Image (tube, rainbow, N blue to C red; front, side, top):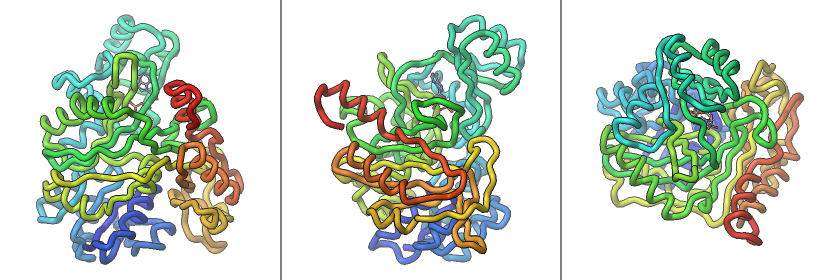
Length: 418
Ligand code: AMP
């Protein structure tokens, strides 16, 4: 099998890394790829990044299957373009990609299909926003309608903050009830009819320790089957994932961002692709040969497949450029990746490039240092041991990735080690 992966981040590096271990794979291509992916795939220019340009790449390398990483090409219709040309592809059609591309569309969908979610109002002008605000308690959550790379959500603690958020994010908005609980990333591979759930993961969106500071694309994640009980997983499949696939014929990765409230799982958002950084600990922990599973999903034959996971946990710590998620410089030399990998960790590249001085930074999130362990505590220790080997000017990272999981297990099973 010849597989093409679209994208250039840590998520795509993790996919390419996992697929390169498959006996069923002859060659992997990445477009546009990055220097990390270049170690196990051939990187090909993505041209102007349009659906047609990606199709031209897939045809030129004679790909049997293409996996789409990021949301932008999905929303632009890359899957429809591939299908029209008879090319196998993993991802949703553009009409289903609206579940991520528009928060208003998603909330209306949740309401129509009775998918558990926060109480909300959707508005398209400032006056209606102000009227709607008077019906909510504080804190209240205000979300911009369109794609915003994790930056279009403001949690306002009083009316003055809410009014400012409406000015900053409007006019098309979702205003919704603030939910309390643990967040879980629940991802399922879907073939239009059947669904194959991944192990649960938890992301860390805020830039600083203790979930403080502004939101980012994700500063780290861990994968541990104990995040959800089997009963919780079954309920999420029955009330959220399967009804969505039945209603839409969804294909590709359906990612439900969930809040585990006292009332059960509620859907904060849908993404229509794999999460980043979640994909890094997921690929790291998956023991199943993933390539045949993906091919089965593209053919609508997922029914007889299952996914298995290594015992214990995997943890990914993101190393970010100084200043991220605000302005940051690039072109800073990176040292120590080989030493980090010598500890047994896997270093996925997110924003890197090759410069005159060797490997250098090229984005806000630069590397995802990923390690496994027989339990969450040891996976955390191993990931941070590897992090300690890497250096670049301005580098920053969270030092508490996975701690929420340790706390959660200690509450659930007093005295148990994470
Ligand atoms: P979203 O893009 O909708 O996932 O929102 C981004 C982040 O804002 C989520 O990961 C949550 O941390 C937070 N958030 C969103 N909606 C709510 C809500 N209704 N209650 C509490 N926190 C929320």
